[in-house]
Image (cartoon, rainbow, N blue to C red):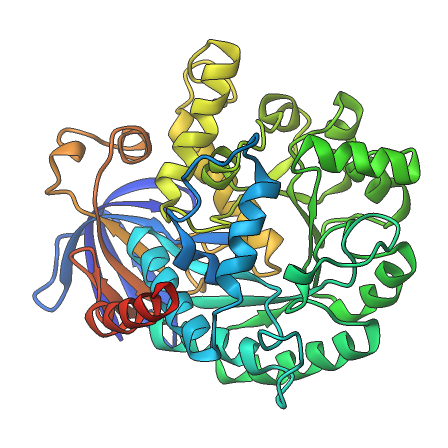
Length: 450
């Protein structure tokens, strides 16, 4: 049993002061409020629940900053994708593990305690499956095991280059499977995650560009009740191509044909009509929003005010991992609306409510829902996954209650410590394995870029 004492903590029922939280058997066993610290208590400033990162492509952390040179034509997702294809052509299994481990350390250091890994890099650089079909999935599991982050593994089905089953391009060769081989990959991945104590498995058709309707129907049962995730309507070109193929928009097609429900997460869903926005909200699915990546790629702005007004749920993802920080993701989510609508505090639900608290609560509830696990609020019986914010940071001076979240998200403020299943993995903002994992990452990237 381990007891922590906090000056202030965001509990399931709200903020409380002078809080003792006792861990045991990976879960919170007892919470006391309004108490003085005992002699054996480890003392900290501010406790908040860890967040879920609903959508990560871990290997892309290694190419952050490599696609910021203007090309000869209009740069967008499709030109960025060519840089990505060239980068991944040089990745060996040990590189995938090294890059994922650094990405997962950065997630923990900034307040994520679970990651949904949308894992679509499956084969060797020539496109041939490894002898162990789950070789690269095992590398993702190894990175999670080394860092301590909770993992939701989402093996990705990818078979085609565009809508209507068009042939893939050469850069996609490492992603490709037919449905039979994908079923084997899913089962091998299910065995692999058994190495982790609280991992779970879902599946992820990459997009309607990469899967036909018949294939989508065939792979749906492989989720076996787990989460189901798909990219949708990220770019205008994708919407136009989908209209040409089906006379329907991507989100519209999924809602009409795929049985979208509360096990689903539609990632991005940036370009929706008002009707699609309401229908997605009403479906119970989660919108997986990745504001920093969507800004970096020039995707567009999600219709968040209308979606939230329709009681839609959202989760937060780091996607390309160009920058890993949940507070900055939430800030970008609100700031995009401020710039678009020329208004402030757009996503606060009503007068007198904190924008930061509304964003944090939404990301907490929707994020874990999207990954198929219970929301990790600070309450008895919940997983002992906690983040402490450093009350010594000047950014938190004089702040109480929801002002703490507003200051963390909009004005900066440091994460101090992080506990996963009651084990401290981050102290004073630094992961306990950072030095060794950073060295391995640097060696890998230096060789890849040489």
